[in-house]
Image 1: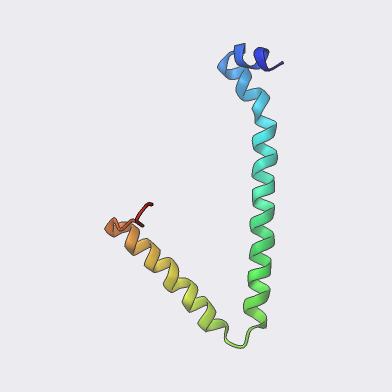
Image 2: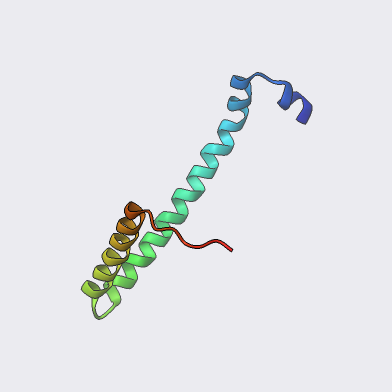
Amino acid sequence: MVVDLLAASRIERWLVLLPVFVVGAGLIAGVFILLGRAFAATVRESGHPRWILGGLVAVVGAVVILTWLGVSLPRE
């Protein structure tokens, strides 16, 4: 079976792997939806939702600016 998959043409290989990609994308979307709902509930229940959202915006902004400037983390 593996040999047949390796010997198949490029289009056939994509057609065989397409269900894997669809299921994988669905799982990833489900996880992001679950985490997003949990984050929204946490923000709603917190005493200071503006502080949480402001901190989130600040972190995202810092990442964007540092990426734009070309700063990278040192590698071991």
